[in-house]
Amino acid sequence: MTDAELELLKYPIGKFARGSKAETPERVAACIAILEAFPGKLRAEVEGLSEVQLETPYRPGGWTVRQVTHHLADSHMNALIRFKLALSEDNPTIKPYLQDPWSAQPDMTLAVEPSLMILDGVHIRWAALLKGMSMRDLDRTYFHPEQQRSMPLSEALELNVWHSGHHLAHITGLKKREGWG
Image 1 (tube, rainbow, N blue to C red):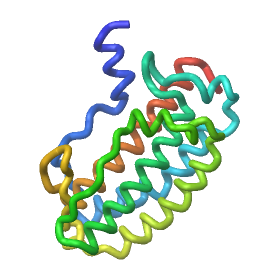
Image 2: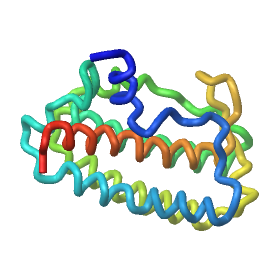
Image 3: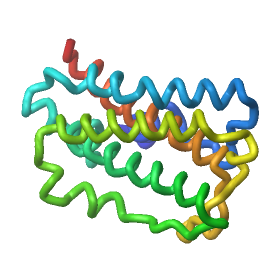
C-alpha cells in the first residue's frame, strides 16, 4: 500500500480545516441537522455486522469497526461536556484524553449497542443545547491545552461535524472495499 493510499484510508473526507467556523444561522442549522442524524446513520452502518466484521480494522494499523463505534461515544460525550463547560465558564481549560489508550480499555470489547445508545442520548441532548444557543454563544471558547489555544464553539461545532463524517466514512469505506452489502 502506498503512502497516498494509506493517507486516503486515514482521512477519507480529508483533514479538518483548522479555523473552520459555523458562522451563519444557516450553517449552524445544517450542522445541528448533521449531528442529529448521525447516530441513526452510524447505527444503520454497524447493525447486522458479524463479530468478524466488527473486529476488522478500517485500515492497516487502524482501529476496528467496534473500536471506532466506542470511540465515537467517548469522543462525543466529551464534546458535549466541553460545550457545556464553555457555556457556563469563562474560557475553561478542557481535559484532553489519549485516544489510543482509551480505545484499548476493556469496555471496547463490548457489543456496539451500548455506545449506539450513548450516541442516541448524547446527540439528542447536544442538539437541544445547540438549538437553544445564540450565535453569540458560539463565540464562547474553551482552552485546549494540547493545542495551546482557545477554541470557539463555532469551530468546535464544525470539528465535530467533520469528526462524525470522518469516522462514518472509515466504516462505509471498509464496507464498500470488503463488499459487505
